[in-house]
Length: 270
Length: 237
Image 1 (cartoon, each protein chain N blue to C red):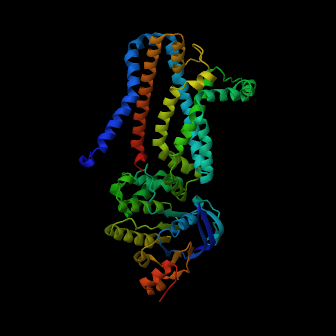
Image 2: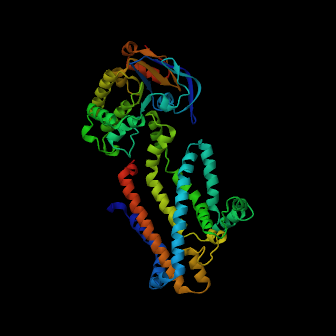
Image 3: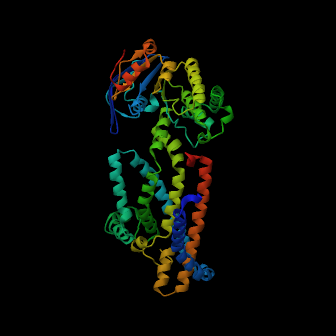
């Protein structure tokens, strides 16, 4: 660090320290008081069920989100500048909804009064208070974030690479798969990590749309809520620590994979 | 022969209008213009990137105005190369051959030939971002030639290079033109490049192209005359 920078850098370091403390002290408090409860909550069938269901629904929703977001973000980039702005504004609407409202909106559309009723009658698929409902909710809450984040991954430089590929004989689809997708990989992985982490912690929309029935639609965040409602604080703290550990472990794992892929592809240096 | 007839283009808010140009086979036409004159947009339009609002582009009598870029057989080498960062030098060069569905054996042999021709053999496994400007330029030229284009568009190929590398690339370009006989349109704002390469030249100014002139006419011009053309005053002593 430059020694002639006067007071500016010490102030920056101080701000960094304050921010870290503000964010990490509550997390540390949960870990401190809850870590002793972890073995006992892990022995509980209910917690093991909600952990498994959380991992399954979160992973499923992340896969669906990312698959849809890649193509949607790319499609938005193909539009004129004006339409791109309009699209981004439209995508920001679900992002700005309170999650409880998202749950209500899903109930209105995919409940037994809207499209959901038709879907149930024609295909037998029911979303309300079911596991598929949890996945649908997680996709709804996270998809617009993923689209907006991936939109930034397709830069004007990427478009130039893509056009160059076309002058070298690629069809539009081939230039997308051979050039654009590899160049999007670093962003793709970081957005995947973010989407996964957000989905794992989602509560409000899930409890509105899929409910929290014990051993049926109970995921880790709703398990915390249910136990809190019954005044079982030790279980709340134990489950919270499990949630934190799973989140950190999976995020680190995804980041390791992401950095390895980036190293292999070299796209991050572009 | 390339014939551009009364071409008008819109690229975002930028427009070019009533562009006319004729480039004979196996010759090099140099377009001179100041920064922001629309040289790159013109090249991109010939390669199929921008919306053509009027006029025609003919290649050997065939109207290619509405052809998609991949059907034109026109390769474009950008000023900053646009080498694919996720591919090695060798993979960049073999990219057009892979796209064309050439066999692995053909790709390997032809890539080796091009690597050798452009003195890139020792850099075959390197990523573009680890190369110098001259090495990147040579890679971009080799990749463009690997596509076996009928028309090669070069966007200020020497502008970002130091004088030693510039001389090297000049020789590479000259040799390439002689050896492959590809028709070339090269844009520049450097008169020396024009003197070196041009069989014919035109000046781009005020979003349009001036009357096209021959190499003999170019050599007869003084620098002040070219300045006059670039400024759009058209002053020639």
